[in-house]
Amino acid sequence: MKKNSMVSASVIMSVYNEKIDWVKESIESIIHQTFKDFEFLIVLDKPDNIELKEYIHSVCESDNRVIFIINESNIGLTKSLNKAISMSKGQYIIRMDADDISLKDRFEKQIAFMNSNEDILASGGSIEKFGNTTELLEIETDSIKILEKFVIPSPLYPPLPHPTAIIRREVFFEMGVRYNEDFLVTQDYELWNTIIKIGKIGNLEDILLKYRITDNQITSNKKQLQRTNKSRIIKDHIEFFISKNTKGNYKIPSKITINEIKQLKVFQDRSELLFRNQLTNFIICYYLSLDKYSFSSLFYFITQDFFNNRIPNSLKKTIILNHIRKNSKIIQ
Image (tube, rainbow, N blue to C red; front, top):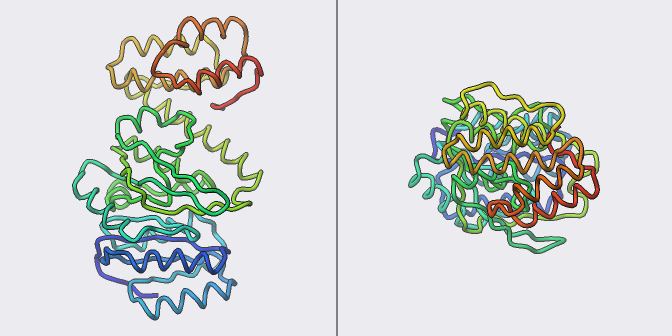
């Protein structure tokens, strides 16, 4: 393991049991970036994977920017990323996944963006899916809208694509932020929730990365854990920002009813415009989380919020369908 002096960026990647060809493509896409002033910390989280170990050792021998960290045992992605962050020297921390491909000018664009926007703590960019499906995923770039839409179910979830992330060093080393090791999945969404309480998140609309789609990326158990974790994060987010803007200590009740929605509307009427928009999305979450769907709650939604232009038509449809199906839980 080698250590470099301070550099512009530290790229962090955790490798476990990905296909060797995928890992090679991923690593080479970093090595051949047009921006050169970085260190590349690669954590092997499966120490008995001899094929990957030998390959990454060979990369180290040919490029002194690469720092190879071999875990003594499998500790998981979240802890591996924190380990790499703790060892990093870069002014920026850049994420990379072991099966994706960064476009060659990714770092050049992202570092220029962060240098020009000193109020942005973390940012990402658009991605192009490839593999089993091909799709361009464009993301929200406006920091205010990212905050407003943070809790809203969307094809753009999460608000900052994790494998495109670049984060200022001071977030980790001055503000004391780390990935929450209680989260084995959705650790990225939890990180963005922590950062957005402190400052701004932004994105470039440029395509920065090719994101590989495979048949069995997420098991059913992990999908359930993702839903549970996402609910925890949304709950924490709503409680924090309502408490902050009402100077109180707001807690989401265990059962969401129309009365809770009416109470949020009282907050909304008393709030500044920016928080009013954010509260609209909190109200949507409550509609999606009602403990009991009934004719009266459907009537209330149609008469009070159905014609609100800030609510996307897709979510209006989902809320009505929930009343028909009577079986949805977002906030738990």
